[in-house]
Structure formats: C-alpha cells, structure tokens
Length: 161
Image (cartoon, rainbow, N blue to C red; front, side):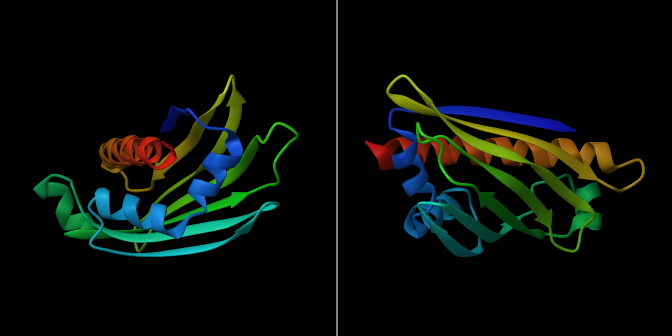
C-alpha cells in the first residue's frame, strides 16, 4: 500500500532539520501520539545522520485483529538522513518496522525549500504479509501513520514559531 504525506513549515529547511534532530521534540511527538513507552536515539550533525525512535503504542485495531497483533505494538522508525544541498534541502531513507509482526514500511522523507518555508514530504510503501488480513491491517497502520504525521506537524509548527 502506497502512503504519501506532505506538510509545510514556515521555517527554512535547516531549522526543520534541527527540530527533527532535537530529542526533546521527538519525545513530545511520542507523548502526543499516545506512546506508552519510547526511546529516542539520534546520531546526527550538519552532514546528516540517523534518527531512530522506538515506541510502544496501544493497538488501535478491531477486536478480531487484536488476536493477531496483541494489545500493544512496538514500532521502530529509522531515518537515515543525507547531507543538505545548497538550499538546505535534504532527504532520508525511512523504515518503519512493527516488532514481532510481519509489517513494515520503507520509503523516503524530504525537506525541500519553498519560498521562505519548507515542505516535508513522506512517500512510503507499507506491507503486511498476512494472507487475507494484510490489506485490512495495512489500512489501519496507514491511518495511524497519517495521524502521527499530522500531530508531528502540529507540534512542529508550534516548535518553530
């Protein structure tokens, strides 16, 4: 299942990059998106780097699907960011893994300068390898990813203000 998200920030790509590398911002996003437990590991500098966020969240699926996934799921989000271009734009390889489940998303994220701001874009391919039920679970995961992106954007707008 293809998933795309796009959000605009009224700040330069360098400022958005700094926000994405701020452990306190990532903690706030985990808290705001209902994570019960989380760990943020950031190894990045001006040339790029890796951001890894592991979070445990309540499984927000139907009771029928809960017997397959359990009451909670642990998601590991790994972003491998490259160096900035001349205008501050940069991109990352993205991977989301649902621990102990046959579910993952691979894709890219980018920060692109636009006027006096930045466009954050995500493009991913979500796959759940469970016969007959995979498509239903993919839709639920996609909803959760989109909701999380919207909340991260809301917090980011406040952070950058």
